[in-house]
Length: 606
Image 1 (cartoon, rainbow, N blue to C red):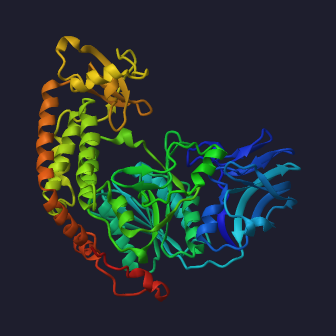
Image 2: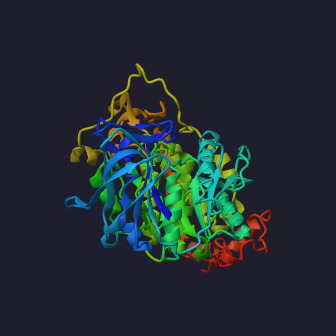
């Protein structure tokens, strides 16, 4: 029997809401230190949750699994009822049986209706007839895997020892599972060269020069290629923690997939509110469109909505993205960070799927956003605009109206200035990226700008601030803002010598800060923030610089389109990255002939 999906219970390592794992009544509970389900007689547990429901559609569309069984391990007498939730339809009960579990004697329960299912969420309801305990529950199949998958996990690290250390420890335990041993490995690329990684036969630690997330992930990928034994790679961020079962399920899905180009994109959940879904796959057409954003994964209805596949993702973010190495046609462009995963997904056109229960947790992007990320965001959007076959000018103008204007009108002048700098650098063509792989000069320059917009600890008690504006803005007020350039044409007498507070995000609300002299950008969960101040001379100076840079960029669109088309093709090849990392030469020794074909992906073409 081969495992497809295992029961995940609330625990002390990953801090998430219990309703994401199980639903139970007052006569059942979970022990956290050693995860197990405990029952009194009459205890009821249901697995129709994010981590323990079975996404029928994903398995049926992409895989060849003809038979399914549920293996239970524990002690006590139980009634097991199998159910199916479907979107906008009544719950269907598919079968029921009684089972007496004894220590050391797992019981296998066939799920015969499996062959007739097409979509929905498969789950079980467990009712205790006696006092008992459930230690494990696994969905298994007697079917043999379709392909021999050798999965190489790659984590890129930079100065996040507190986050990556526990993650590596959890993954090390996963690698020791009998069904995963010799099939899954971990490569930690240490861009800050300061990480202690425990010795393990399936873990490789690579101290690496810092070429950002792009360089780190490519360096890990080169290591997988050199070993000539891996068929798939899984990129994971060091700040995106996950239940290791997400990795195991990804491995199982790939093993049973009959589609060679199948890739798996993990969902992103909010670290501070783990039930909040940031995205479950995404699309990019000049700007990011996260799919299923805002759903609450504690709710069955939202989980079924998240399973809908009306729109297929066209890229997977590198906080969790597994893909077939042999199907790489285009290697990442050296963006340092931001945009690299988007271009990699678009350029390779993998068949991307998502799966409830395959996810990681991340910090709020808005809280981390600042001048450097504004620069990086603007840069990759501009490059994408120049590579697009149509609407190039419109997309360039979007960068101005969205990324520059929104920062400028909310008193974040340094972030606005960073967008202008990105425009200037993009005008230099692909040669600028080639000559600034480590981005050191750019990072140093932006680091000297003031105000820095750096988040620092705040003591807000007793601070005289006005809360955020909550009522809708009238049309006349909006017109006044537009005619006065967000109040920067108003006389000083019409400005309010007050401070308003805004929750830290990618930018402030222009309507809420209008006429205030100061804005406190505050991230309440971390107690950090900074003060932004109305500055008329700075506003017009940044606006003037931006208009000049935009004008020059638009005048050179034709040349830049040609340069980026040629340069992009040359800088997304395996040969390019081999030259960047001469310390990682191509291996000529094959260690496993059975997977040799997967170690020689084609070189990218224009």
